[in-house]
Length: 233
Image (cartoon, rainbow, N blue to C red; front, side):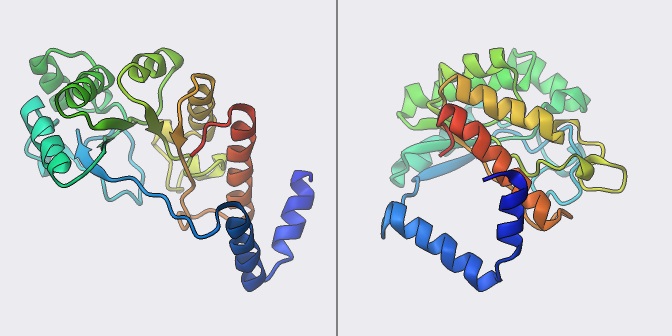
């Protein structure tokens, strides 16, 4: 089906019909199976260079004690998760905070690193070697070299597309002033993760000002890259 015909078909459905159709497709593929990951969250940093106007995760320097968790803190969280039966360590962090905040650059330097991604790689290696938990990394936008380096210490990664709509990056929209939320940049990262054969988690955000058609276009964009690489979990 073409993009236009998909839009026409979906927009012609009532909410009940749409939900029932989705449920039937789910049941045909998976039956009554539900998968989940026993994971512990490791918030490596809550700083981010982007300023998404709906975000409740990222904080400014005055609202946090330290720019990054130190290695002892990272390991302590991982060990506590392992004791509770976790199998995966989900590293959460903002996108390249050192490009925006002096405090991030200074702490990275004190730790012996020049970038957040370099420090992330080291902490993922520490966790997998010391605890056996499998690192799942959510570092935001990455280039091909970043991905290949992190692939050495992480069996899976994730990056939310959020939206494929460039309109949401315009002034007055939620992604204005957030260079890493350019949909072309994010889709390129998702595509490069597929080229590197890395299992990838992704998705869209609903309720940030997007239209229904923009949601559909975002899902179709994810479907397109998944058909090429078969990597989206």
